[in-house]
Image 1: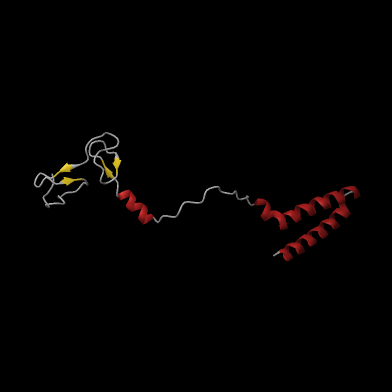
Image 2 (image 1 turned 120 degrees about the horizontal axis):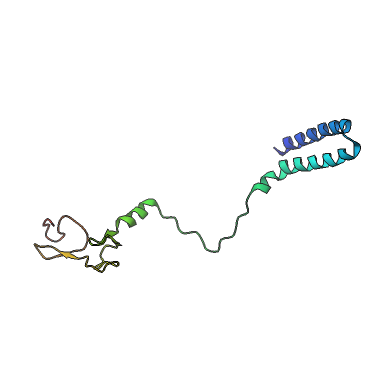
Length: 128
């Protein structure tokens, strides 16, 4: 790729030299030729490097990748407070936002119900 770029550079400079020698005053020929050569050289060999951004060093390592399935399980584990709707972790006895009790009891067996469900986990009775 650089060989093709070099060939184009040489042909372009040669063509420009012929054009400049024939049409412009002698003092401008050298200045314009040098400017065009520098622009072509930078565009062919240094253009990609000049446009790249430099990477910065990071002080702390990146966090470990966690698949979406595990993230979804974490979100599903949250329970809403029946009184204020605040998200609480399963197994908590009181809401962290409003302080209301999160534990209800089965009317049939008196067992504690800590997660929202339709049936009692102890006796299987339907919860109201």
